[in-house]
Structure formats: C-alpha cells, structure tokens
Length: 272
Image 1: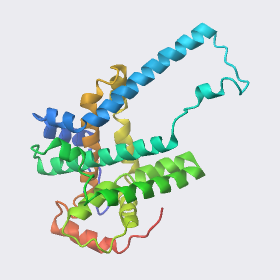
Image 2: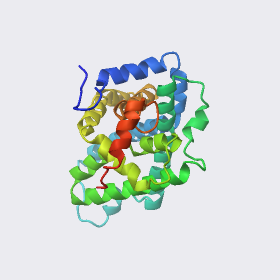
Image 3: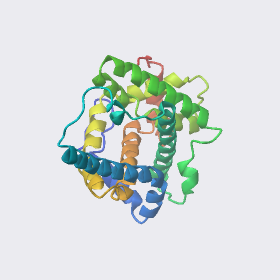
Image 4: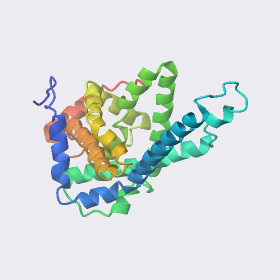
C-alpha cells in the first residue's frame, strides 16, 4: 500500500523502491557492481577482520581461561586502538567522498535509465573543481552538527544523522539544475534536507532496517555477499531520495512541483 501525506504525492513502498532498483539493474548488474567495488572491498576486509578478531578472542579466552588483567597497567594498551586519529578522520572523509560520488551516479542512472557511464568517472565524480570544495564543506558541517547533537545524547545524534542524510543529493540537484543557487549557503542545503526528512525519518530507518537480514547473510559469507548487496542497497537509498524529493530540487519536476517548491523555499527556517 502506498503512503500519502497531506498535500504531498504518495510515496513508493519499500518493495516498490527495491523493485525499481532491480528493474534498473536488470542486464547491467556488472556495471552496478563495478561502481561500488571500492566500498565492497572495504566491507569484505572488515568482515574478515571481524571473523579473525572473533576467532582470536575465542582462542585467547580459551587459552588463558578468560583470566584478564584489570590492573590498568600492563594490559591497558592491548585494548586501545593505537591508531592515528588523523588517519581515521581522513579515511572517513575519503570514504564519504567516494560514496557521495557513487550516489550521484546512481541518481542519474535511476532517472535516465542509461547505464553507459564511465565507472571511474562515476566513482570519483566528486573529485572535480565543480563539486569538491562544496562537498568538503558540507561534510565538515554535517560532521560538526552531528557531533554536537551527539554530545547531548546518542539518540539526538542518530536522529540528526537521518535529518541530514539527503544533503548531498539535494546539493547535486540544485547545483546541476537551471535554478540560480548563488543566494544559497551551505547551511541551506542542510536545512533543506532536514525539511525534506520531516515525517520521513522513520520511513528511511525502516528501509535501512529491511536490509538487516541481507547484511547478516553477507557478513556470514565473509563479505562476498556485499558484492551484490552493496549496489542494491545503496541504489535503493538513492531511490528513496528520488521518490520523496519528487523533482522539487530542479530535476524531473513538473511545473506544479516547481511552483510549490518555489512557494515553500522562502519559509525555510534554519534549525540544526
């Protein structure tokens, strides 16, 4: 059953979103897999790390009779990550930039149904003069706001993560549309995401939750299942944006949609 909100077009169900992605990928799964190959490799490595870590922990507990030293001295460093914080932040930033580029490409693919794009160009589409600085600033702002909300409690931080989740795709649509975006600040893109996700955060959460069985199965296959799951999952999340945005940000919008959007944009209130 489709879901309809007052004054808005009805939403596609989770099944319809997934069916749309499967129909788009039909005959082109190879292209989808190549597009998400980099995050898949990291997911496979992470699955192996979890498996090896679990086996190592079982071996350690078995061999030592679960006798752990809690003196806080000799074994303290055993459980510290010992990593470089800068390296961790940089890897998170790099992963985000690649994923944003993949999302941009999936959005174009879902809209045009054209699969003849260059994979490397799609993966690294954010690393261009046109998008890099903007996406970098948005990444820093989203990270900062999410961190500040998380300082209050974990739950507000999670909620804001969903609120800000469509920022990059909204930026893409507005940046690549014919609309004049000179009067938009980076904060406006985040605000528009928050406004767009009003009433849809639970929908997005349930969509993500619907993949948990597949996630577990992919981990049990030592990450091999992510080869097929990652493009399917990622594109479905992009299809969710395409559905709730309804072309209101300058792409594939009817005249009525554009007029409604123009009338509402002046009423946006910046809240974080």
